[in-house]
Length: 511
Image 1: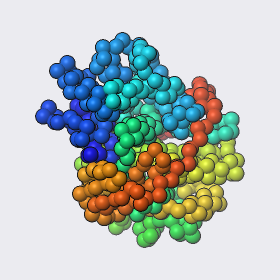
Image 2: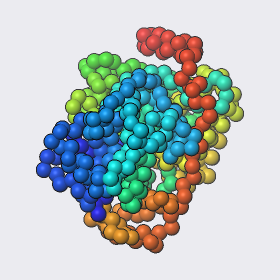
Image 3: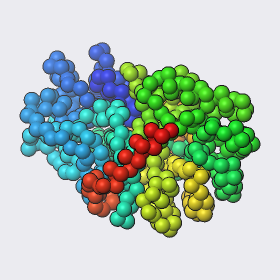
């Protein structure tokens, strides 16, 4: 039995998610043989033509698993739809999706008027049903278009205190959608009695990675030196995104041999047109070259991203970029822009810095607790721990305590460049996986890519090998990540958001 996902039609959003998860997939073509042996799950996000419906129904009725949206379900079975526009949905407390919490979608959701469906999560409007010997799982929205959404807005982020920190970030919760798809595919595999197998997110079977990013705008040499001392004390090679306005500071950065040096900006702005972005970046690159600094990646001022900036990044051929108005709190991916995938890997981070916590009137102890909770949540959610800071804001004692906490976990400390290089190797490692009674067979030898294998009884992480005997593995129940309470307050109107948006616009105009 081949463990591979079949994608019906051209769905670049789903391709992004499946690459992130690390599960083998292929696009179904006209001459594809759609059988239970060829595909463990089929994803349908486009309307199926009448001539193709018998093939899908045959696959379902004979025992296949299908993931599709309500619009496609209604088309397949000639059901009526109801629609409603929503900003966000919140998962149920006790469903398989409970850890997702609040999911921002800003789109229309569709309801299938059918008593034949079972509710998997009332809050997220996710349904399932048995069809013959097969099983279907139905989303109320179109994953593909949501993943490709590039709009941004200000969002507040969860903490137990009354005033919440905020930042302008990607409008759609793409990391939540990716996890929603992973959970769904896992369930659909288990419904068929199959293991769910995907490439692990971190190198060498480590349980997670920690990456510390620094944006150096307004940073003095003295502040940078103090910051690097705290990093070295805790065994951390940070990724420094350099503001090139000062020759003196660049010479200082060039002496940091154990740190990664990357590009931030010359003028601290992102422009709407290609030429202005190109001129700004070329000026910065020229200054870095004169200081004998070879940048590895890029992070835009204010986390801003737009397609014109993306074109520039493709043309200057850097290894990666990181902009939280495109995505945040997620796994790396190649963006899909203007009909093609970018050549520059995007590495999302957590977008709330100590500066924003200060702006939201956090006390030092509250700042520390915010990051300690964030690290613990990401560790147990299998999401890379990537935080960022501006050295001119200091708070070195808080960061020192954060780093000490990181060192207590069994995780690997990396730079963004190191993680990007490994992630690209992960993408290039494409095993063909087959399930045979109680074992997995692969076409690839051992490497530094591991597999996560889940059965209904639990999961395990093991090295990729040509043959893996499941009977000899010890599967462990994963700790459930509890959903935060009172999530509606995150999206209630707040006068501070209006003020911060005004200050953001005014600040950019002055630069």
